[in-house]
Image (cartoon, rainbow, N blue to C red):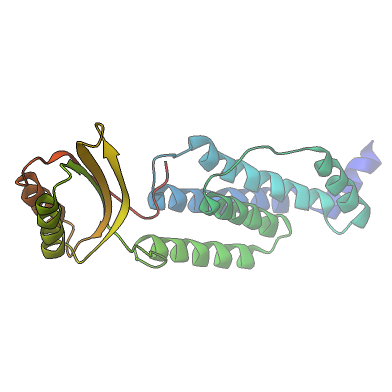
Length: 225
């Protein structure tokens, strides 16, 4: 037993192992904090943030346990292949942050501290810069406009004039008869010059005779339910 313990301490000293775990904990906490600060949407998961930190510690432990032993690596990979992870991540960005936390855990486990620190800092700075910039946003329309009007050519022309005046671009999405043909329901995608122009547009449409069911849905890119 004593020989086995001495062999383990010869491979890696406990001070180095402790430093590796602390490094993995610190860097993964930084990545998790950046994820929390830059998250956009409504499906925030506290367990995912905690999984980033815990997963980093696990990857660090595995790399320390493997060391330079190829047989250990094959055995651990084979044992992990038995475990099936069925958690679905709806946002690819969540997977990237989780993979980054595992990456710093691996770097800490192999005592590549400079690589782990540099990679974590660059990753966090890039995530903060992308979150505060419009990079990757490709919005052709700002909102979805729905309303119902009588099937009168004069009313239809009036609505078209208002859309041409108060929008930069509008596209007809759907048009269908409701109430046994007494009313026509329209759905338009509209692009506005300014975000506050939707109020002006709605005020002008409300003055059209026979207008009812007027709704405007704002389309925010990058926000998932």
